[in-house]
Every structure is written in structure tokens, then in C-alpha cells.
Length: 314
Image 1 (cartoon, rainbow, N blue to C red):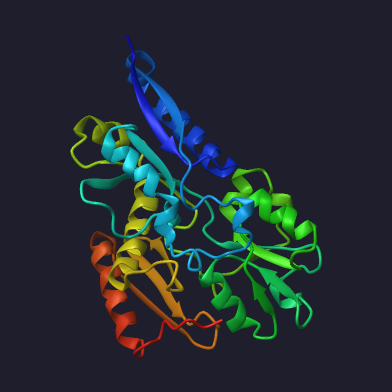
Image 2 (tube, rainbow, N blue to C red; image 1 turned 180 degrees about the horizontal axis):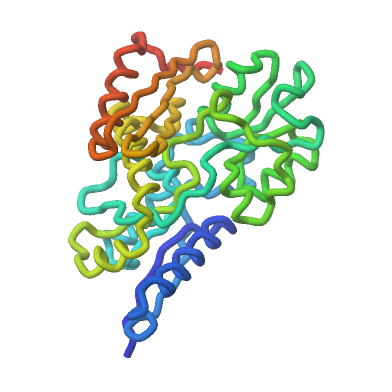
């Protein structure tokens, strides 16, 4: 009898797409899975999943943080209800519960944000006073830093939900991860890509990761076969920086690492939510020391922040 490997995921269209892609990659790379295992996708509702009763309340207003997107999945891992959890890694807190680890990054798409609007081609082209909807403080801070004349309002929901809200006039534009739009076949909704000098992406944006028990030794060899070494290295660098700063939904942080030859370069920023101050730093060094480099840049960024930098802002 085949052993069932249970792959946990959120139930959003994007999360289910990513889980299916992960299952396909596992089956394609690991021939023994066809013979010995059945990979079953288990959909789990998380506290971060939007529902209409919440309207546009932010996570902070609900007393939560980005852990809301993964808490129930991690509880299912720890209880043995699932064997692996598939995540959009940008949603995973930098500090994991004891006993769990990110064992593989299976792929990373374009990490940049995308500008979505029927009223303008770019963020720069929006008329003065236009309304941009986003539930991300990181995006809000950088949008207002670039265009302080705009108004930013909360806009929650899955990608398709936010696009429908946009079509109904809830806002003039929104900013979404290009990776998610592309994976759902919605790339035609992208008015333009936003370059990283305007909006730096969230740490690990565009990356799909697999979380398991640290002691699940039978999983380590299996997942090593699907791990994208370059993506994994860059993501570890970015998450190391965020870990130093204890980043959460409350702290507008951004980080992006790129592999350049034998070196890794990481750029990061911290911003006030109202966009009045953005502090940006950059560092490069040998790829062999990538995680330490991320920590070092995190410490450097922390040293540049005045007391009380992360205020409530806009």
C-alpha cells in the first residue's frame, strides 16, 4: 500500500496553485514517489484568510501579524496532521516554531511588485490625490514616500478579490506581487512592473517554500532534490536580515538579495508607515557567507534607525 504524504496549504486560488506546482515538481524529480507514495493536498483555512465580515480591517486592527497566514499550517505540522506545508515564503515569519524548518525553496519568480490599474500606466502617472489600495504597510510606506500626494487605503482579500474591488471602484490602483499575478494567469492585469528603486519587495517575495519537521529525516533527501540552490541562498539571506530586525506586519521592511557570480548582494530598507522617512542600505560579500551577510546588514540597518522609528504613521 502506498504511503500518503500530506501536503498542507492555504485554500486561496494562489496557494492551491502553488501546492499543485509543488506536488508536480516532487513527482517529476522523485521517481520513487510514484511507486511508494501518494502526495495528497490538504487545504487548511488560516486566521489570515480574508472574509467579507472583516471588511477592510488590517491585521494590526485585528491584533495579528503575518503569522496569521501560517499558524494553522504549522500547528498541523506539529500535530502530524500534515507532513509538509507549502508557503508563499514572504508570508512566513522569520522566526519559526521550535522543531520546524524551511527545507526547500522550490522556485522563485520575479520578486518585484506590479502596478495594477485601468486609470494609469505607472504609479508616477496617477493623478494627484488618486487612491491606491493595499493591505501592506511596506507598500504603503514606499508608495507615500514616492508620491506623498496619493491616498492609500486598506484593500484586503485574495488577488482576484482585490482586482474585483478595483474594478468596482474601491480604489484607482493597487500594487500586487508580480509572481502571484503571473502564476494565476493574470499577467494581463499588470499595467507596469515597479522597479526596486521605487518599491523594494518583501523578503522572500516570489519564493515558494516547503516547511517540515526538523527531525523528519526521510523528507530531507526528498526535498533536497527539488530545492533551488540560488533561490534558497537569496531567501535565507533576506530572512536573516528580517530576523535581526524582528520584522512583522507592523514594521515596514523590505529586502532583496541577488547572486552575482560568487558574491551575493543584498539591499534592504526600513520605512515609516506614512512614508516620511525611508532608510535604505546595501551590502555584498561572498555567497558562502550569505546568511551572515544578511545578519550584518540587518545590524547595520538597525543602527541607522532612530529610537521609535517604527511609529504608527499613516
